[in-house]
View 1 (tube, one colour):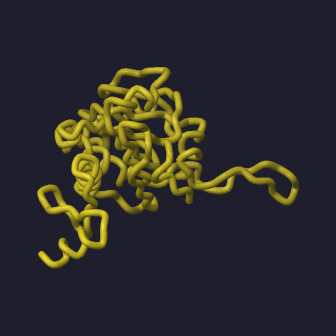
View 2 (view 1 turned 180 degrees about the vertical axis):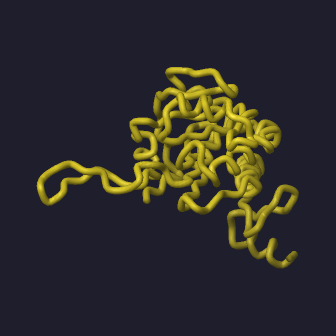
Length: 210
C-alpha cells in the first residue's frame, strides 16, 4: 500500500455527480487548490450496506466541514449513472437522497489505482491470458489534502470497516492547529487542547504540566 502522506495528491479529470443530481464531465480536485482543504474518500460500491452509512454520516456533518473550509468528495468505481440513481433513491429504500457533495465516477479504476486503494490488479495466467485478480472495487481509503494539494493524513480500511467522521474532523482540526500555531498535537489531541513545541524543551514543558 502506497504512503501518499507528505506527497502531492494524484490529480485526475473524471465524470461526477454534484449537488445531489447534476452530472459533470470533467470534475477535478485542482479546482480546490489554493482555496480549500479536501477530504477525498473512496468507498466500494453504490447500493450496498456500509457505504450509505458513511456517506450519510459525512453529509450530516457537512456544516462542520464547511466551517473548517473543507470540501468533501467521494469516489467509487461505479458509473455516473449509478451515482445519479443512488442519489435519487430515498434513504428508506437504501438510497442516499439529500447528499450534496460530489460523487466521482472511477469507472476506469485509474483513480483508485493511483491512490493505491484498488482491490486487485491485472496479471497473466498460466495460459498467457490477461485476467483481473481481485474485486475491482476500492477499499475505504480517505485522504486529507491541504490547500497546496499535499496529502497530510491518510487511512485505508478493509471493506467491512466503516470510518469515523468524528476522527476525520479531529485530524482536520489537528492539521489546521499545526498550520496556525506551529505546535504539534500529542496523542488524543482535540480542538481546544494545548499543543507541543517541536523541541525537547517544549515536550518536557508539556509533559510536566500533564
